[in-house]
Length: 417
Ligand SMILES: [Zn+2]
Image 1 (cartoon, helix red, strand yellow):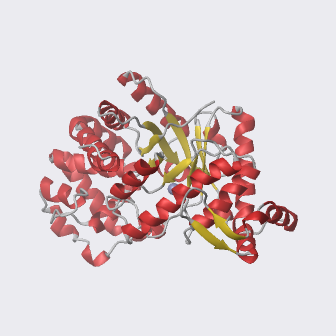
Image 2: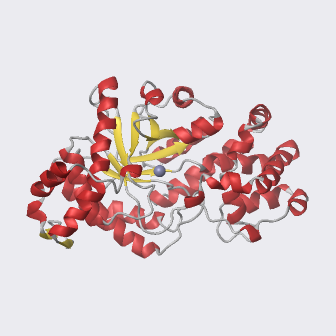
Image 3: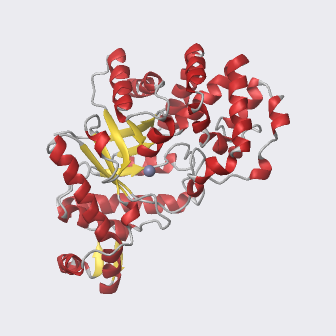
């Protein structure tokens, strides 16, 4: 039976060159007493844009693990798959993020809704999360609304889960269910009923990715009130703990935070809450590794710097096309993007400082950072040159990748000094 460890981190690597640098961050954390399971993830969308195959991620992970002599569990995550896209991931993945966000709001059959409502009748009036101060006022109509909003999506999750289970065998993979890519966040009370649905559909879910309040933009800090987030996150943690016992869900079921990179305002809160309740966490940090490659090439100067300047200049020209796919998860102020002429004069330090996410650095420009974040397609169009530069400047690049994951993500999240 595959079990995901208490702490795990989703490592994305669009171009497949940084597996070892990422793993080094995990190894350093373990030397400091924090055991984290590495999970390499890549979504179908990224594979299509880059022209890679799920098998490439498996090969990269296996080879990083082998060359480091890493003896602990690790996983390869088929990220945000659905019934149409899962097939080519089945063979080479052992972690599946079943994305049912697009089914939210579609109504299940009346019979299924009625059956669910009778199953959860006892929670009508007041839903008390036992052994905590948390309780929610609930009404019949409110619970009915939740069923009408989410039940169909969870029934779809079962369909996708069964397809994977049939091919891989029960217990041979980790199941995550994601409902984060929607406009409306789920409240802790909704989460409770969603977990009930997952239990009745017999989905052995080990991680769940809800949508939280506030904005989780790609590659930049949290936009919203961190204290409100902390309150919501704490309630979610307590709801999960209660639901695990109440519905007999897997013991290790934990929260998965998507677009989890760069949320510096949240890490101290998340870290202290999971410590207080002795809970686990899965943090997905996908796209940030590509940015570190750009920073590493900029810092290398010469041809590397020229290449990434060129990427920036082209991304200005293609800004609409590049941003369209990510419109909901980026927030670029075009007026704050420096012009082509200005950037072509920039030094290594100025260019890398503009992108590197060091809050308080006067060169840091989140608008440039977000634009580069979505511009990886441009590097994919010049893959041969790009890979040659990555290989020629490997030391500088892998240092950036390592320091970002270890120093700016793992250390603040797990309070490593
Ligand atoms: Zn996600």
